[in-house]
Image 1 (tube, rainbow, N blue to C red):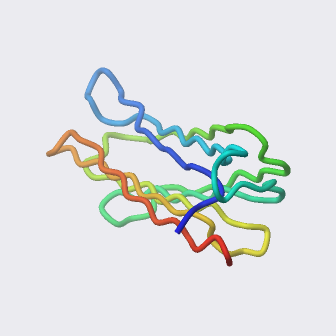
Image 2: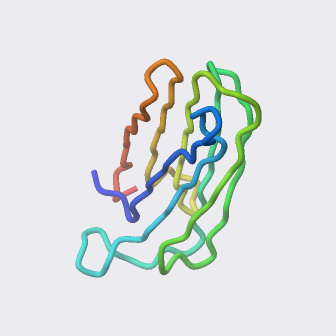
Length: 122
């Protein structure tokens, strides 16, 4: 399964306690040389931030015309212990074009990413 855009995410750590203070997500449409490659009109990125399975915050960024890489950032309050950021790139029809999860655990001090690209024919 191929997504029409690459979705990347990273934690931005607070230097004082090594815990994430924010996150940054970048959505980059596929180049003309990649498959699938087509204009992305009316797509949106939705995100949900969880700590120990409790929803901390959520949001959306609408993209009228996604022609180049776009970044979205969010802040994290407090001193988290276990975080999961769930991202969905959503088509204008409401179908999910791509999903990504970014995990952070204070005990491991390492982020883990998982991708789930939706079927491009949807």
